[in-house]
Structure formats: C-alpha cells, structure tokens
Length: 221
Ligand SMILES: NC(=O)C1=CN([C@@H]2O[C@H](COP(=O)(O)OP(=O)(O)OC[C@H]3O[C@@H](n4cnc5c(N)ncnc54)[C@H](O)[C@@H]3O)[C@@H](O)[C@H]2O)C=CC1
Ligand SMILES: Nc1nc(O)c(N)c(N[C@@H]2O[C@H](COP(=O)(O)O)[C@@H](O)[C@H]2O)n1
Image 1 (spheres, rainbow, N blue to C red):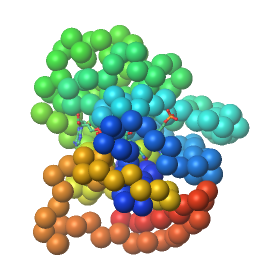
Image 2: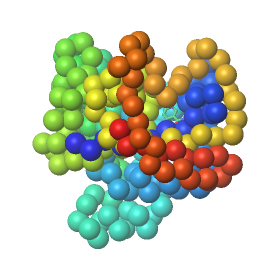
Image 3: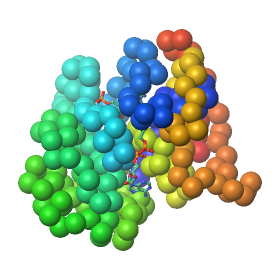
Image 4: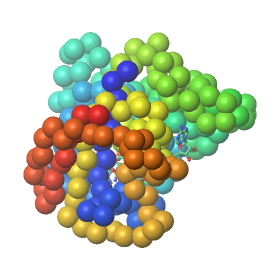
C-alpha cells in the first residue's frame, strides 16, 4: 500500500479549533490540489473523529477528473475508507451515499447491531484488530479489494497512528497564514505522541510550493 497523508494546518500546527468544527484553512488553489490528489488515489481515508466532526463527502469536485478516471477504467470517484473501531459512523453520514464504495475498518469490539446497520446502507465492513483498528491489517484487507494507493486526510489521531506504525510514504501539508491556538485543538499528529528522540519519524523535505496565502510542504517519509 502506498500511503499519502494530506492535511491543512494553521501556522501553529492546528487542524481545527478546540470546538473541532471544520475550518477552511486551505484556499481555492489548495482545495484544487487536494482534489487532484484524491483523483490519483484508489481510496480516500479519514478517522471516524473526522466523520463525526465534519461529515465529509470525500468525492471529487471537478467533473473532468471523474470522467478521466472512468476513461481509464476506474470508478468515477475513489473509494472512501473510515477507520472506525466501534462502528460509530452515523448511518446518515454523507460518506455512506452511493457515489462511491465506502469501506469501514472496524475492530472486533464493534457491536454486531452497529455493523449490520452500516452494512444495510451498502457500506463494506472489514474487521481488523481487537479493540482498535489495526491499520496495517486494514490496509492488507483493502489491498484485496484492489486499493493500492490511499490518500489520508486526517484527523490527528489517525495520522499519529499511521506514523507510529511506520505506514506513511508521503506527507503534503498546507500551512495557512493564520493562528488558531488552543491546547485542546487537534494538531496534525495527536495520539500519545513520541517521547524518545530516536522514535521521531524523520522526513525528507522534497518540495515547497506557494499556494493561496500559504505554503505547501511536500515530504517523503
Ligand atoms: N485541516 C485538515 O486538513 C483536517 C482537519 N480535520 C479535523 O480533525 C479533527 C478530527 O480529528 P480527530 O479527532 O483526531 O479524529 P480522527 O479523524 O483522527 O479519528 C480518530 C478516531 O479514529 C478511530 N480509530 C480507529 N482506529 C484507530 C487507530 N488505529 N488509531 C487512531 N484512531 C483510530 C478512533 O475511534 C479515534 O477516536 C476535526 O476537528 C476535523 O475538523 C480532519 C481532517 C483534515
Ligand atoms: N486539506 C484541507 N484543508 C482544509 O482547510 C480543510 N478544512 C480540510 N478538511 C478536510 O477536507 C475534507 C472535506 O471533504 P468534503 O469537501 O466534504 O469532500 C474532510 O476530510 C475535511 O476534514 N482539508
């Protein structure tokens, strides 16, 4: 699996405010870059925290990109993936409409009635892990559904877990020219955090690009 993480933060590294509502940090040029990344992916993934906070759709905005994918024998929209240990995704979430296949990675602790409710919407439930989604095992399960390239849009809990598991290949980070602040506001990588210096993932800065009123930092991991 090739894993590309893409996100937008304020200059102080926040994905959102302490209220955890969606904030437009990116401008039109960066949202277009994000749409291009989606079009190049087999699947777009978020954690259930992002589904609950933002109710994202995760489909392509630009119709020409959908048409081009169909011409190439691919589904018009990339598949959507939610890491959702306890199957908490609401059955009326936008991510569960019929515009793309949606995979829900759940853990063994997910209640059967919740799993059945999600399957009834047409979502494809894949079990990986005991109490929390085992992301490496989840990616293996996705590979058996022809998902080889995944773009992860956040949030901070899932991004930290991916770095911790050594599963990230590329990171692109738009840094908007604003300060959000707040010790409880989500950041790019939350979770438990790393402690030992030799645990910190070291990134290679491969490109810097100016878009809207901010910058995009491109890293190889
Ligand atoms: N500015 C940006 O680019 C973006 C901002 N956001 C913001 O991020 C916030 C949501 O982020 P978070 O609360 O961190 O939620 P998250 O989206 O990272 O989801 C975390 C949840 O995923 C589930 N999960 C399953 N397996 C897991 C694993 N192995 N490791 C970690 N979590 C696992 C758990 O239920 C956990 O609570 C919202 O405020 C949203 O607006 C989200 C995406 C992009
Ligand atoms: N890259 C980026 N920049 C921002 O400024 C953002 N607020 C976000 N948020 C994420 O974008 C996705 C929205 O998806 P739909 O437009 O509903 O398809 C979702 O993943 C948000 O969390 N991203």
